[in-house]
Image (cartoon, rainbow, N blue to C red; front, side, top):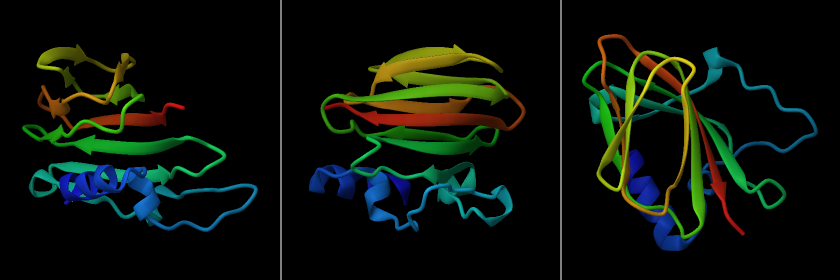
Length: 137
């Protein structure tokens, strides 16, 4: 599961996407139809890794879809890690240290991800969002 992979990455003190391989090149195009999601919450939380971490770019980019009722509780990331999220459709709630932040289409949030946090669909339609994870120096 995604949660187990995050725990492995944190235990190894590496980025989550370092566990995934992707060909390197000057220009990368990721086609939505070719992306395989990582599933959590019985498939109600789908994580599409778009651009993984590498030493020259200390961030990762994900496309997330959360079905109504879907959620994911994430373990804290490495110290200094930040997440930035923008919601494109649906109503999401992002929790950080037990505080919920409701987000609708066009809303964004940035937070220190080295503490407990989670994501859930707070509405009746599929949530689509973009997530950038930045690994601090």
